[in-house]
Image (cartoon, rainbow, N blue to C red; front, side):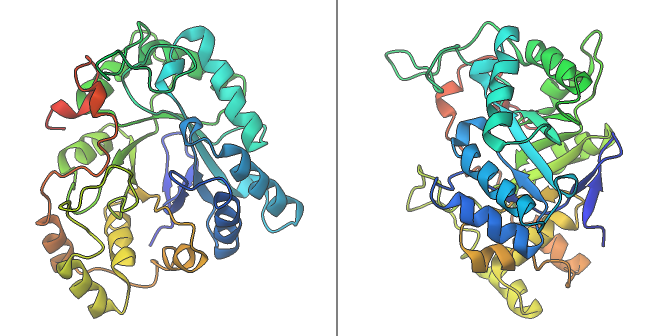
Length: 317
C-alpha cells in the first residue's frame, strides 16, 4: 500500500498528514512534535488558523534534535481570500513562511475560491453579517503564486474548496503556467464526493480530505448533527478489524487514493490515527461505507458568503 501520492510535479505527498485547524496555540506545538515522533511527515497549516508560529517552533526543534530533516517533511499552507489582490499575495505568503520558520513550502493552496474584502478583518462583514467580497479573484492570486514557484519559495501550488466549474476556470485560464496539484476538500462517509474526486483525478489533480472524522470540535456544531465517530455502522466495521472508528474513517480515504489530514492534539490519538497501514477494508466494506453518503457538510462556517458569485457549494460537485 502506497504511503504517499505522487503529484503532477512528481513530488511525493505523504497520504496521511496532521491537520492543525482548531489546534490552539499552547497545544499545537506538542501535537506537531508528537506527530513527528509517531512518523508523520505531512503537516497541513493555514494563515487563518493563527497558530503557524507554534507549528514552526515544533518543526525547528525536531530538525535541531536531528529527529527529522527538512527535506523529509511535506509542509502545506494556504492563502486566505482577503489576500487575493496581486500586491497582497506575497506579503501573506511571506508571513506564513516566517511564522513556520522555513525557507520554502512544499505546497501552497488557495484556501477558498471567493475573494473577501481586503483589510485587517479575516471575515469582513456588512451590517447584516454577510461577508463582503473582493474585486480580486483567485485567478489574480494564482499568477502571483506561480511567480513564487519560479522564485523557489514554493514547490507546488493547489486549491481548496473548489468545485469543478472553478477548477475548469483555472485550467482554462489564458497563460496558465502551473496546474493545481491538489484540491483539498471536506470528505468523509457522509460527504463522499465521488463526482468531484473522479473529476479531479481525471485532470491529474490529487485530492486531500479535510475533516475526515466529521470535525467533531467545530464551533457551530448542533446537538442534532450526525456523528461519524459514533455511527454504529462504522463502529461495527472497526470492531471486525480490531481498530477504532477513526482508523476506519482514515483508511476509507487511503483506499480511494485520497490523502487525509485528521486533526488531533492528543498524543495517543495522533499515534492511533497513523496506524492505518496494517489493515485493509474489504471491497464490501468500502461499498457499504459509500452508502452512508447524505451530502452532509460539517464545515459550514462560511455560509455567510453564500450570496457571493464564487461560493463553491451551490453546485452538485
